[in-house]
Image (cartoon, rainbow, N blue to C red; front, side, top):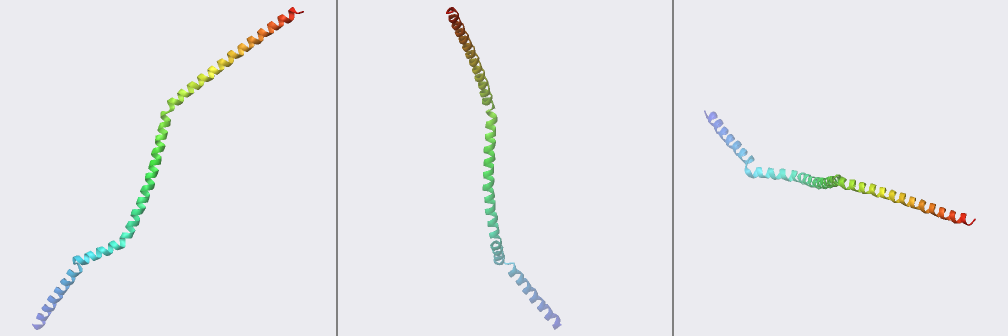
Length: 128
């Protein structure tokens, strides 16, 4: 019987010791220590990821601004097609007027040249 009592007492002590070790291993301060270790190990990597992401965001914002600016420029160009049509019409009108002026000056010159020939010919023929 003494053996059984001794074994029972040893078992109780062993169970209490195991329970105490379990409580100590899972005590909040130990958990906080482990959490602190984890943060200390992973924080530099997280900081690096954050700076990389900020850099990529800045580059993306710059690219987005450039694309938006280019799109607005293209839209402005398509909206200005009316002005280009007006300019085209005015240029055609100016070319036509220039041709009319050139043609009328050419006729006048021929008329003046013809008149001079007639006058010169009459004077010349009457002198003979």
